[in-house]
Length: 113
Length: 110
Image (cartoon, rainbow over all chains, first blue to last red; front, top):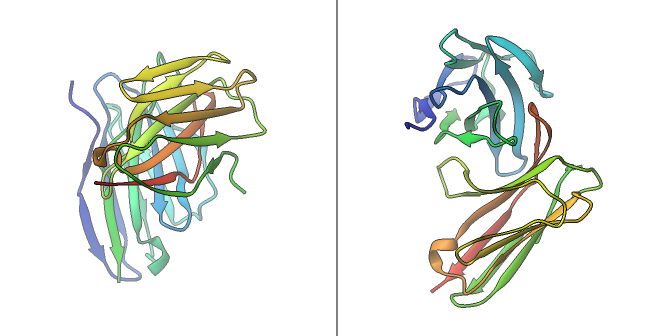
């Protein structure tokens, strides 16, 4: 069974630009969560989607948004990029049958210059 | 303030030594996971514990869930350089509410 895939793996943008990151969950998993990871803050929860609906949202500004498609693939978008948005963005998928077990993708390393 | 407190934050040991890292909370969790993450990669799930007092072994790694389901420990016997990484614990209260600790960064020197 293929794991969680994320594209692109690396991205360099400049302040003020916007970016879209993509995540394909494990086949059969309908829930996708997004996290931001930085050395200073650790893993911070962004949002979670299930069946194309956002079920839970972390404490991030409205510049961070996401969506999920009918095939469970998910995208997150960050508009008006700031230097502080530089981070590893991780996507995780999980099935409802699991005991809260999330399986992570390799992440997208975003650098904002 | 982290909901899950992990200690120590950093640990550097020699190959062959034993170590224990801790994950503590004042909250009760329905399950708790341990992950290991290497630089530039996503966390990899090591184990899930769900029952208070549960002990699980994965080769040289032993995981324990506290009786009250508020804390957990990870013990590594005879550490190897390949054990180097960031160890994260995550507690779940329901299927869409997972909280992560800040992690313990382990370095095992050959």
